[in-house]
Amino acid sequence: TAGASGVADLAGRHVVVSAGGTRERLDPVRFLGNRSSGRQGYALARAAAARGAEVTLVAANVTLPDPAGVKVVRVESTAELRDAVLSAAAAADAVVMAAAPADFRPLTESDVKIKKSDDGSAPTITLQQNPDILRELSTQRPHPGAVIVGFAAETGDATGSVIDLARAKLARKGCDLLVVNDVSGGAVFGSTDNEAVILGADGSALEVPHGSKSALAHLIWDQVVSRMVLQQ
Ligand code: CTP
Ligand code: CA
Image (cartoon, rainbow, N blue to C red; front, top):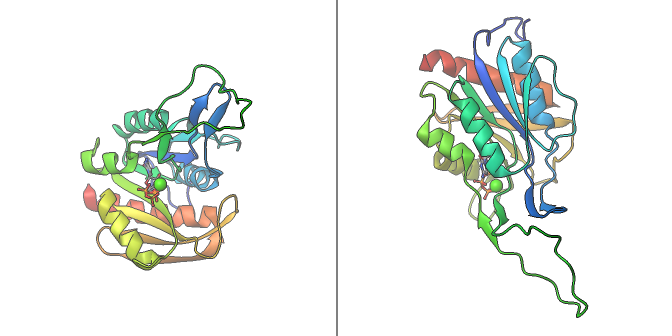
């Protein structure tokens, strides 16, 4: 099958895409989570399969139907996401981290349901940082030729514009491409459309006008494919 370009330019390639939002367990019935729907990651997986790739989709708590022709690995927490992504990445020509891993997890997980007390008090939950999967992939390069892609939703602040912050994030992560959503005007969670800038570690910046997640997915794969050729 062929992609938007009409060419199966990912044929013979193995790509890994992560999608969704991780959940960090507090007790047997509760977790800390986020509102990532997984739609952009699923669109990326579908687009890559349409362009001929063998696709492993690591899905964290996504309720969407499995895309056809894609291997789906289901995970819950950031630790599980990390294990699944790193193991699939060893044989991958590209890894796209579209998932939203929780930055923090509770220091301890209770084996029993946390109960409330009659005095009106509330427990204090101590958090610890989760491992940064994208940074680990980029700095340790399980497959040296692979193209590594990150996502970032940013709002500009006193320290810089969205693009300044994104450039700094790209450098900090060490990835090859960073897909940046400007969320200053309100959240994009759950929306079917997207608008983004694709930054390259080589200094490139491609502005993607408002459009479908599928259209953005194909433009991301275009950028990945051109770098695969360079890195071959
Ligand atoms: N990411 C990751 N592992 C984490 C957190 C984030 O791999 N523990 C990846 C995301 O999948 C995304 C990219 O890193 O592709 C950027 O995520 P973001 O949350 O913007 O980066 P953080 O370093 O967590 O920075 P911030 O403090 O702005 O949340
Ligand atoms: Ca984060």
